[in-house]
Length: 313
Image (cartoon, rainbow, N blue to C red; front, side, top):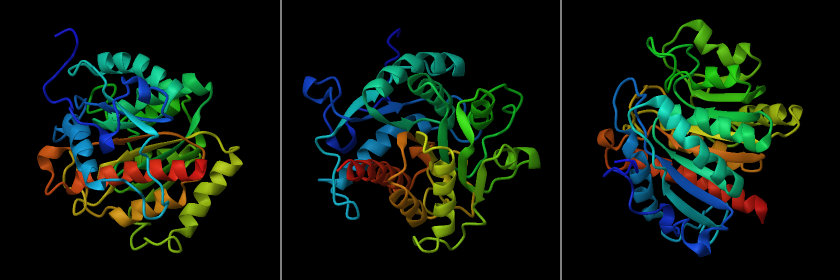
């Protein structure tokens, strides 16, 4: 029991990449790790099974050559498996995740598979130590995650953005939220705007899918990054940014959301930003249908990685 090994942890790897523990893969520039924790969810649990589902869905990508970037992560990617963590205490989970995150961030460009969104705060803390400075943030979500408490608890999957701002982990003017549309008091909904960042709501993005239609959004994101000196940019993608029609398998679905093509276009068009890492969270397989949610998550991770590799080339 002391090893925190649980039956739901994944056995396969993302894109059939070699295990990081294998000597031949220890020096790969990119790595995947699962964070199988959903102890901070407020509605439907199950995101602890997300890493396993995303890895399974990635098998559909076969040789994984991206049709837009014409490249593949094969040979450049390894899978570190699921981080061994306690699964009942939020603070214990975050404390246990930190040393693993620090080691992996220092040696690889990381993509983290959640898990609920409470995992992002310790990842940002680790990045702060690695880079010695706050980072820019691109945050896809239906929810602003800027509440000052979590239904009476001090922290959870809906407070991490507020906590990250308060701890100086992100650059306020280079913090971008995309797809926000859930209920919430004005101070929470507008927190990122009020702090100098930018919120693109789900309503503002309705009907915009092509690069041309999304150009004003993309241009503003680029301008903000340029003004901030092109800092390291962290991508945190909550799968519930998608409308439930595209991602039913999540704990807190919100109608009126983004489409899969919208998110794909934004990731493709912004591939040349100074990315420093990514997480994809809140995939809850017990509520998924026909792997719709896991497939979308898998493709977003794949697109992010292929965009990075294309820029390296």
